[in-house]
Image (tube, rainbow, N blue to C red; front, side):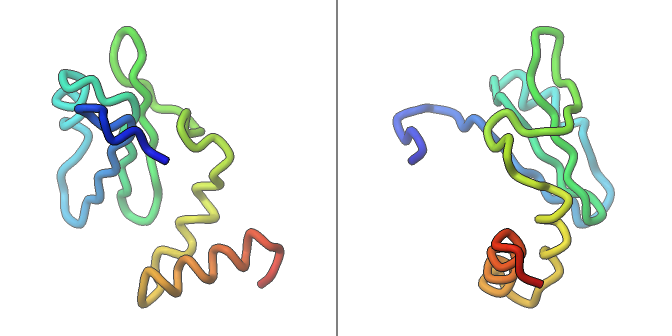
Length: 95
């Protein structure tokens, strides 16, 4: 499980319903957040903190095996339960 004794998270997920954007990276960098995900227009962008700042990367450091493209195809379901159910089914090789 997650380490609840930490004073900051390792991963932050931002969902943008309207315009806005990655200008928040400067704030997260000052807070020392290791990885920031932005969900924008049905896709996920991952930004990983490096020495010089955030770098956009293809895979999460914290969830390296997660297929983000596949996961995003289930985010239009009517409920979280349906999205989780359908995602699990896809991972098992179902429809």
